[in-house]
Structures are given as structure tokens and as C-alpha cells.
Amino acid sequence: MKRLHVHAPERLVTRLSLSFVVLFLVTFAVVALLTLYYARRTFQTSIDDNLQGLAQTVDQRLGEPGAQPDHVVEDLSSAAQFIELVDASGKITTRSSNLAQRPLLVPTRFLSPNATRFRTSKFQNSDVRVIYYPLTNPASNHGYVVAASPIDTVVDSLSSLVVVVLIAGAFGLAIAAAGTVWLARRESHPLQDLADHVQETAASGFRKQIPASNEGSLETRELREAITNLIERQQEVLARERAFFADSSHVLRTPLAVLRGDIELLEQGAYGKERLEIVAQARASIDTMSRAVNGLLLLAREPEEAGSGWEVLSLTVLLARLVDESRVAAPQLKVTADIAPDLEMAGDPQQLHDLFASLLENARHYTPAGGTITVTAVPDGDGNVTVSVCDTGIGLSEEDAAHALERFYRGAQARRRFPAGSGLGLAIAARIAGIHRGQLTIGPNDGPGTTVRVILPLLN
Image (cartoon, rainbow, N blue to C red; front, side, top):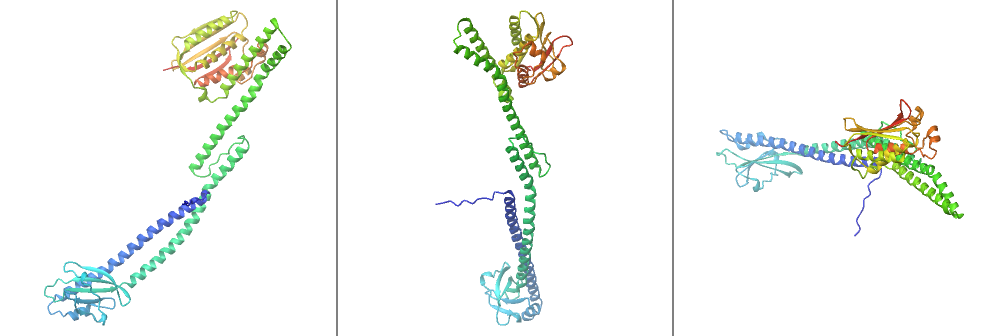
């Protein structure tokens, strides 16, 4: 058996309009039914009260001395009030003249000596409300008063009320539907505008920005802001990807050229000492490319991804080991250290090793023989440690210091002093410091040389 699938409208304006119209109809129907029910009960209660008052008057008049039932019934009857007196068995003993030859029907089941009963019945092609009222005067030979009153006016009033309610409902529905369509279009316009801008941004390769706007509801503005942030995030990712490919081609061009030349020399049959030198040069080019690729990957990755694999490590031990290695690598320099004991922090050991190794390597490259490199690590009392690498090398100009942390930037003196540098070391070091919730700064000394400072958080 196939199931019937009802497809909901796709446009927001249509959905809102239909939903509001259905809600209005349901609410209106409930309110109208309750109103008509209350009006009918009110009219009926009013008629019942009048009939009961009439029956009590009949009962009272019959209890008066010398009262004649025919006169009492006739005096109290009218064109809109019919009266009968019946005995306990339901037999009519007296009736008003306006009943002519058609008495009111008196089903015996409605006669109760202890309770007043009401019913609605047909009489002379009209609806009437009938009361069966037990008489309280024990001297009376009559058992009950049966009184009736036409309710055609009530039916007509209810019919008129139904017509008025339906007309009001139709008018209200028309206004509500028109207002809903207008409001839905007004509120959906900023969403459509946002969708158009998103499509334009996507078509431009996320180069275009989504313009700011205060139109629409709070939710619409929050959605615009969220999508804007998402697009900005995507732009950052694409920018990192483009930078990665551009940087890769830039930094790998030279070692690849060297490798190509080395392979050509090997193909030409180089042997002996020359072959060993070619192999060593090729190995150095491969190491250069490996370090460059690792650094570029670190720069291109998200901070959350780059910050995985952390552990507690001793910064004191790490710096002391790197200082000892620098003394061995550069015996022509004076390498001193002033490192506070028991400096512990959370981080990636390999990344932090690369950070400070890069700073010390730069200091060795750009410090002439006989110069000094000083490494200090001092806690500041606020939960951070400041690690400084100070050298007496060629120094930095103010312009070089302003651009030193940019990728591939190298000052004129740096290029002359160390032509083989890639210009990525400080950029990678600054990124590692940022990943570890720290900061790296560089600037010239008051005297000769340069000082690089890294502020990192310690364990509490």
C-alpha cells in the first residue's frame, strides 16, 4: 500500500502564511463555538428563569383563598406564555385559552414531585421551552404547572449572531492573511538578500565580503553575523592554503634546483671525493626541504591542530641543553646563560625545541667570531616566563625589526651575512609561541646586536 506524501511548500513566505491562516481558522472556530455556546446558554437560562418565575406565580396565586384555577391561568397567560395545570398522573385539568384545542404534550417521565424539569419541544411548528413545576400548595387538586414559551426569537438571534461571527471571521481572516503575507515578505527579504550575497561571495571564490546590514529581526542579524564569520574563517583557510603553495614553491625552488644539478652530475659519472661531496650536498638539500615543509605545514595548520600532543616539560632543562649544543656548534662565540631553575610548562616538546633552536641558530649565524650570545629565562611573578636570546651580532634596523617576523623577509645585512637563509625561521618561531599562548618580539639592542624575547605561560 502506497503512503501518501504531502509536500510542504518550500518558500518561507508561503509556509508562514499558510501556518498563520490555519492557526487563525482553528482559533477563530474555537472562539466562535464557545461564544455561540455561551450565548445560547445565556438565552436559555433567561427563558428558564422567566418560566420558573411564571410557574412560582401560578403556584402562589393558586394558594390564595378563593382562587379559581381558570382565572389564574388565564390572567397569567399571554401570546408568548402558555399554561396548563395537570394532576399527578399527567391529566390536564386546566389550560389557558391561547392553547385552543392543542394542549402541550406532557410526558409523564418529566413529572417529578420533588424537582423542576425543563425541556425543548415542538408546538404548533415552533420550538418552545417547557417547564414542569410541581405545585407546593397541599390544598390544591392540581399536581403540576406546565408552562411554555416560544424560543423562535432566540433561534433567530443565534442565527443572526452566527452570521455576524462568520462575516467578522471572514473579514478578520482577509486582514490577517494579507498582514501575514506582507510581514512574511518583509521579514524574509533580508534572508533572501543574505542568500544572494552568500552566492555572490561563493562565486567569487570567497574574495568578496558580505556587507553589514541592520535589516530584519535579531535572529536574521545573528544569522548574517554567523555566516559572515564563517566566510571570514573560510577566507583565512583559503589564504593559508594559497600562502602554503606560494611559500612552498618559493622555499623549495632552490634546493630542488640543487638536487637536479646533483643528479645530473651523478648521471655523468662523478666518483670518488667529488661523488661524496655531491651526495652530501643532496642530503643537505633534502634536509633543508624537510625542515621547510615541516615549518610551512606548521604555519598552515589551525592553532588547535598544531597544539596537539602537549605534555609537561622542563623549560630549564630544554634551554640548558640547547645552550650546551650552541657552545659546541660555535666554539668561536661566547655563549652564556642565566636560566632560573624549575621552570615547568605545558607544550609540545618538539615545537618548543625548534623554537629556541631556531633563535639560537639565528644568533650564531649573524654574530661574528668573538661575539657573545646570552640566554636568560626569568619568571615574572604573574605565571609567565620571559626567555631572551641576546647577541652582539650585526643587529637590526628599525625597518628590519618591523618586518622581521614576516615570511621570507630578510634584511640586506642578513642576506649578505648568511645568503642561504630562507626567511622562515622567525615566522615559524612566532607561530609556535602563539600556539603555546605566548608572544615573540624582536628588536635591536642599545648597543650592537639583537634581542629576541619570548613570553610563555608556566604551570601554576
